[in-house]
Image 1 (tube, rainbow, N blue to C red):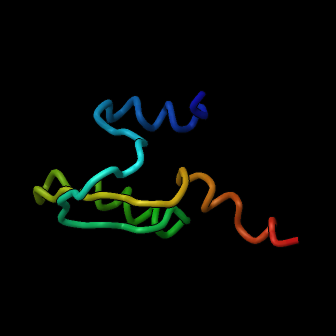
Image 2 (cartoon, helix red, strand yellow):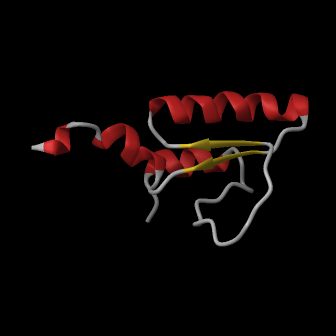
Length: 76
């Protein structure tokens, strides 16, 4: 089951997926990391991609929500 926020985000871009990267891929811009800065950069690049014909790709080890939310609180 996907979280509500992810369902809402993906409904605006039905072609978007959250599947793991399985093979080589080609992209114009690659953003690595799903923290606040990485997500903000990915959003801004996606907004501008259509204007410039770029194909951005965002990569993270987990779903992006973990990077921003998990933070330092788990370090006990």
